[in-house]
Length: 171
Image (cartoon, rainbow, N blue to C red):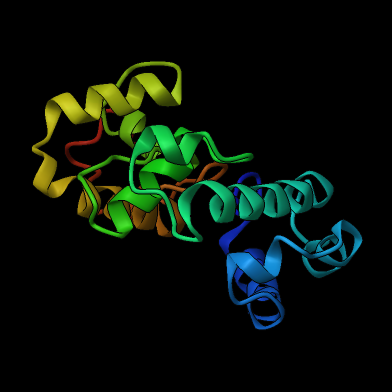
């Protein structure tokens, strides 16, 4: 939830204190919005995200007995949880194969010609059709790492890219 429109670096800076103060949903559901806002203020949309964190904690405690839901439908019923976040949870917890499409996956898969759609959800469908479910999690991570390190948004390092010979977007 915190990573939407924010960098992983920033999220990783604010979460240790958030988790220290509120280690469980049952603790977080009783938090004050202003306190959560102050803990996560460095991430984008911190006011909305603070409200979502508390509302999600309440719902998880009331509806799911304090446990993270284990279906896409249940996860996306939580405030502030969309398709990508639900897919991350399902994939990382190895509940079911899922293919989260973030900004890096979207950009890199289109540049490499792996997908051509113009929305994240449609790119997800293209990638799911093209690749076997057992590699979705790893491919998701490979595309993210490649996007962060080489195939950068503003200045891709095409001259340093090992994929430049097969990349339709190489400069």
